[in-house]
Length: 329
Ligand code: SF4
Image (cartoon, rainbow, N blue to C red; front, top):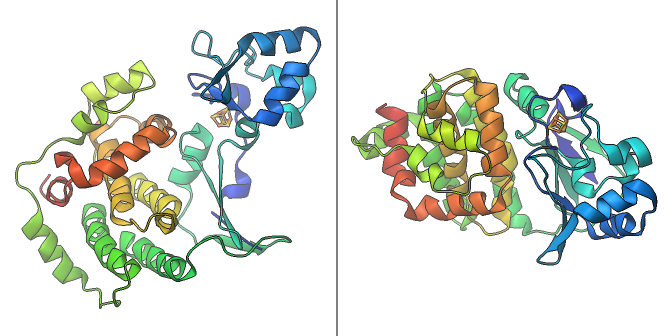
């Protein structure tokens, strides 16, 4: 089986007690069934504490957040379960976070979630280098439409190259227009020559002159923390910086192939472009803004779904508005 991962993937190390925005705060931690049954059967004080805090919702087990923190998160910054029972006793989510796994059967793509501050640091500051590929035992038959995956793998490479080709706002505008070309190929159309200068002229022609801010749209999504609500209501716009290009690269790497599930590439491209626009619009420390964006948006399946749907219906996410925000602002 082929394993594909960012070149910085193996360098990730949890900051534990030194983490500025630990994954042990604010999130309700989902506990997989096997781990929940182990906790329910556990003796002693730890077993009592786990049973006290475990609850079920819609058939899933969770640990109830207390005072905005995981009840197992000790004041010294360490996890009580890990300290007393070892890492193997952690739930799947706690063991894996912030590592992402996309298992396509015959190949596995790994990544890191930007919602973890240390992962965000690696994503934003590591130089742009190709994925690392290695062979490992195991694997299954492809669990996807192989023709569609061939198109997606080829067009993702092209999209990553486009991202490096111009000033960032122009590159993102080109990325949006290229997504339509790639979508056409995904739908069975022929590959046509890519002419960036013609596409840029098209982008200028389509770009709205009066733009809607993205903050209003994001303020209408599910909000986890009050500081995110405050950021959305009081943005301090920043400039175009190379960290935003790294965020776009991360987005393309993370979401492009997922179109194999529903053949919809354009909405995922808009998700990536809108994330850069929003993070820039919010301003502040770029690393912190990107991390909190990811925590609020990417870690909420409901929010991601709302953006993918809104890509076709919400006035702030129309092609004209996104192009206007990229080119005319
Ligand atoms: S958010 Fe990342 S660095 Fe912080 S505690 Fe969690 S895994 Fe560790």
